[in-house]
Image (cartoon, rainbow, N blue to C red; front, side, top):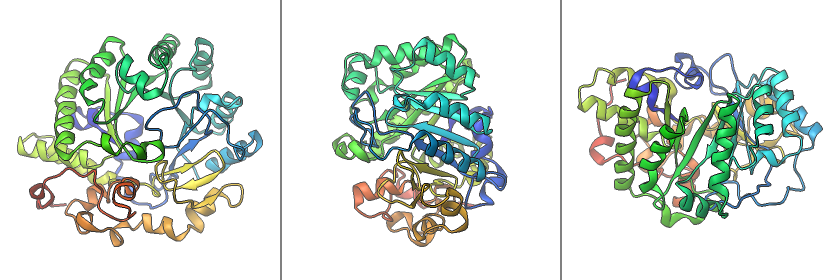
Length: 394
């Protein structure tokens, strides 16, 4: 995750303390020495929509093996035990769980910061008010374009209007809310309109996600951006962000799921002799690139543990059979150890890359999906040969 607002202006946010702290590289089991990993909890497989790019392959049915309320409470207590600083609750659609508000309250009482990733359609005024009162830190709502594009992605004609209504309901009660936009060849032309939407609706946060080909997203190979298209798109996002941030210092704009973005921005700043270049380089080094299995992990609706939410082909254990602390810290499985020493296993351009300390091999899930090898070079890397061979002084 690259916080463009921080890189371009120095603005601070809570997540930056976990991403860019000098202490964040001192541990291989958490965000820094005093905290465990951020955990993504896919709390349910059930969803009221059928999105084309759903990495979890969700449908309208609740999984038979979904954690009970009691099991979910035990899971939350395990998160407290490993000092998880943030729990990101996703799905499916997390609000499809009847006990979701109860579980959020339980997590908050345990001292765990809670964020929510949702399609926004179930965020009624009543639910939004309750989430605000429970102390949910942030709600990210997925928007994949304006009405016709978003509705096509989501499989219903009402998805866009309902998501916007959810955003407004959150804003009316003072609940922090933002947009999540997954970039594909089918919707990148709408990125300017998404920036406009952010400004028109006074939305404070906007995250641009690179596509990771998992779940139903694995069928979207034809929607992948070429390296040239990615560069052009990131150029636009960076340049538009500069303009937005110059007038709206409270906005937070990020790119997600491709650590090459940080390197690309640094090289741009360096070429322009921008005085922020060295500071950006320092932040990226502290961050250490992809931290799947290190500072972020995932637990699904059945309690299965994974290195991240996109690598669900590789189960590390189950929290109903072994405590998360044991799986993550005291007796990690062999695969998790490999994720923590990826430099020994990476292949292709990722092996021995000059930028390895800044990228850490990027997304293994994307490499496996497109190269059929978990340790192959990430096809999402869009740096040129010259940029890859840049002499990096650390």
